[in-house]
Image 1 (cartoon, rainbow, N blue to C red):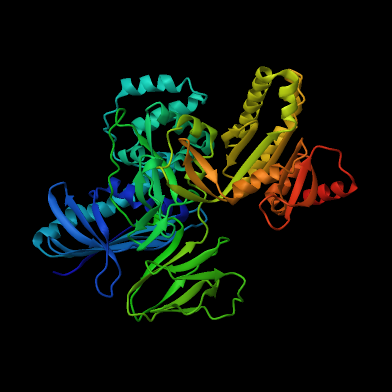
Image 2: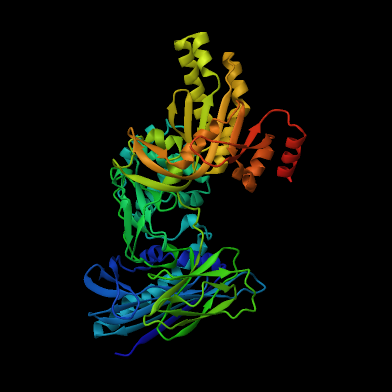
Length: 617
């Protein structure tokens, strides 16, 4: 039968960027506009064409449908489209998409939205389905945007179907009574209560702390603390999601770290990856079934919002040439072919006069870099259709990784049972390790006796834990009167070390003590392992941190010289008025001399004064 094409258009008093953020989340929008839930199979490929996923659904909950869903194509803040091909049934295929155009005028910012679709019916029933379901969903897409605008264009109030969830309010209230005893703001408990009652099944079954913090307009660290305590009290469950480093989409979900596998496979990229705490293992939450039974139904699996780091995605058939738009951006961008994962860097330093032409061949790209033009011409000379994406090179910081949460004292206290399986180890690309030690502690035991000294040392542990915890770190273990602590970021580790030394005099005054602390910090890669039923850290970074602490004189902080080359570290040192002395040291087990820096509260000599002044400038 003949193809039937439809276009619906409407203007909205909203910027393109806002509308894009709304409509590119097709999983959420499709639920609203009446598209049915879908079950997708792993990626498949036939002949020289691009990959696709098999899909199954029931139209109106009754009519079974099966089709091949091909990858979305899009330009961020501009347009997207997707094609579905049916092997049998009332439709042969359809292509559905949305286009945004700036229509601002003197009266304000405006965007014209066009919903476009082409349907090819196979039977008379298909023609009826186009009118009853297809056209209605197109009109509902515009209604979705209008309802969002009428609600104040606030992403805390995204349009959704009426929630008819059965919430066990007595159980929720009982558990919240326990939660109120925790050291958290009661306002967060109220927001969580409303969230669990009012939000859709998808929202409560797939809870991301950063996204929720944005909706609540609250500090992400505090929101994470609330969700952790709510999990401990049985309101929520937590899960660990393994994220593919290429497509950056969740591939596997585990309910405990002990279930984590060292390797995982991405069917889209066709490659196995090692689990890495830094980026590839993310923490998510979901409502506990005793409070509300919710399932995150899937309506779409390849929409732009699922991979927001991808700015442009296009299919280039073999033998074809297309113009690939390169938007203005301060971010590092690159071109990449999906599945083959061949990459080309967008280099802003390459002269703009260079020809912006790329060729993709069977063995990869014709060159490794291209200048940042407004458009690059790409020719596909290979024997396969390809999908090319323009994406951010750097990972987004808007996730809660295992590296971050396992470095939190509260997580380690609340979930001490969360350990890796025996013999399992996971890498962290970057972590900050702190070692502290009491100077002349042996004489303390000789002077006041074992019992008194033991009590004083324990109080000193509490003092250290307080400042480590305040700076998002955690105590990994104590060794005699020494402490090993871990921080997700260098800034947090340095803040904690400096604050400890600034406040140790006040701690001494309370008990008329004369404690002097040696502190060493070092950052780098490490291995996370299960040791004595706790998460522990091993490797060269840990060894160096311990050796560096040994270079302390007491009342100081010793760090690697590399810290001083980083702007954030310089700012922290300058703001805290610590004085800097650089030196070299021979560390046990390290062949070459190591460049170190000592930060102290002592009155600086002329050379130290000049260094502090240079840090401030």
